[in-house]
Length: 298
Image (tube, rainbow, N blue to C red):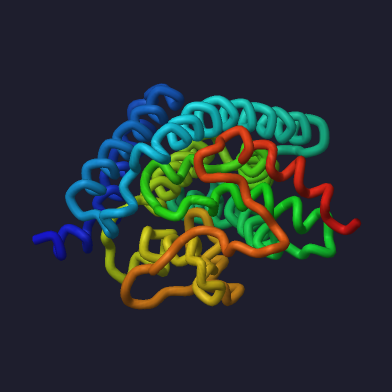
C-alpha cells in the first residue's frame, strides 16, 4: 500500500492544486486569499504524508531544531520573504513602467503554452544564479559571498517541510527578482504570473519533503523530492539539480542527476577553511555571509 502511495503522492498534489488554480481563474477569486489557501493546503498535505510515508525517520523535526525551524518559517519565510518580494517586484514594476513597452503577443498563444513558456523563462536566471552560488571560489569575494548566502539553505542535515524555509533573506530577494523580472518585462498577464508563483510554492515545499518517492517519469519534468534530495547531498557528484521548479535547464545544461534509491547524507561539506554557523543559531546564520565573507581574498 505504501509503495503505491509513494508513486502517486507528488502527481496527486500537482493535480489537486492545478484544479484549484483553474477554479480560481474561472471564478475570478482573490489571488492573495487563493495563494494563502493553496499554501495552507499544500502544507497540510505534505505534513500528513511525512507521517504516513517518511523517507527517513531521523529526518523528522526534533526539539534541537524545532525552534530554529520556527524562526526560519516566521521571520525568513513570512516576514523577510514578503518584504523581499515587495522590494523586488517594486523594482521590476519601476523598470517595466519607465523602460519597457508591454506587448500583447502572449495573448495570441494557447494559455497552457504561455504558462509553460513563462515558467521556463522565469526559471532560467534563478537556475544560473543557483548554479553559480555553488561555486564557492575562495579566491573570489563575490563567489564566496554567494555561496555563504546560499549555504544557509544547505546547513540542515535532514530534509522535511520546515527545511524549505531555511533560506537567507538575500537569497529570497535574488530568487524573486531574477524570476519575476523577465516574465514581467516580457508582458505576461497577471493570471500567468499568479500561476507561476503558485507552481513555485507548491514544488518548493514538496521537493524538500521527507516523503518516500521513487525514481520516475516525473523527475524529468519537475523538481521532485527524489532529485532535490540529491541536490542537498554531501557527495559532490550527486549535488546537482539546480532547478527550483522544473528539470528543463538541468537537462539542457547537463546538471541533471538521478539514480535509484535515496540520498545517504545531506548538509554542507565541513572544511578547515570555513566555519559554518551552528544549526540552532538563527541569528548567526543571518549574519554569517556578511561577517565572514570579508575574510576572503586577503
